Image (cartoon, rainbow, N blue to C red; front, side):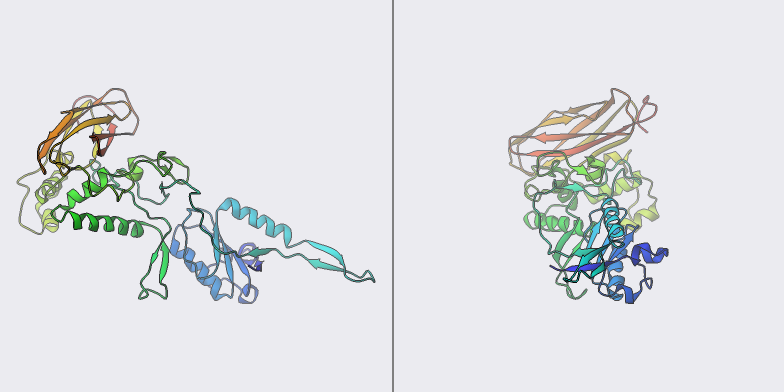
Length: 406
């Protein structure tokens, strides 16, 4: 541990590029051997990393980055650095401003000679430490992709949530002179899901991509490590399916989902036709000469592990098919948490399977019970003594709730 002087040129010079530590904006003579205080107003992790490179090239030995839109994202800086939010950053700047102009008298010998000594602000760089259980996890980050699905609102997006914030993992030396790196974003969440998919495919090699997706979605967690609802940063509000999809991936449950919502290529072809794909567009996806000889009346007919009704007018029904991948003889009962203002009925309420891979249909009917604003959320679970198979229910009532769904 050692003390370092903080240079103020990054913040106090009346040049915008200097206060934000942009390229070629720093005075190497004044920056050398100092900890620089820099501002950051964007959202790019790459631009934050570049600031540390600029400070390093200018001779700085450390950096305090005041991130005006702090999202708690760790950055693999090239020099010792700390990221703080705007509130803490203002306190640091107040300390610097109040300290750098302070002078005081000190008696240094018996002749009572007095000297003025300028007090300089200092910064300490301490060893990093890990604090376990300090915050509830998982939480949905501010930069996570959120619903609703703007292209096909009948299909809930996102599907699933996975670890993607401040992921420390092995890093290929071919990329840089690093054996480990820390990154955030979809590029970190995707490998977690990919690993789960590889595990599922190894245990169930005959399962289709849709079956694998279903197992991941219907077994997801809906609570954090304290068994409380998952929250969304930075406000800490309660998350909903537009934040986490079906929930947080649960690798210990995916191998035994009990029931799956399966779909084959012809189902997706009919789905594409239902959302307006012409033959040319369809061929670009399917790479064959098949046409829209079969189509769905609505995109809702795709056998998806979630149900979204984006424009409910009075009453609407959705049919789904589940496949038994649990014990040959197993019985499930429907457990419904209806969205606010919506009556939900399921027929049948009980599914009794007698063999492995047996398929059974059920119909979910939504009926407007009370006017609501925007989307409302609920869930449907098929439950037996050992398994819960859960699907999100997402509904938005049309402005005029008369007639049929359009």
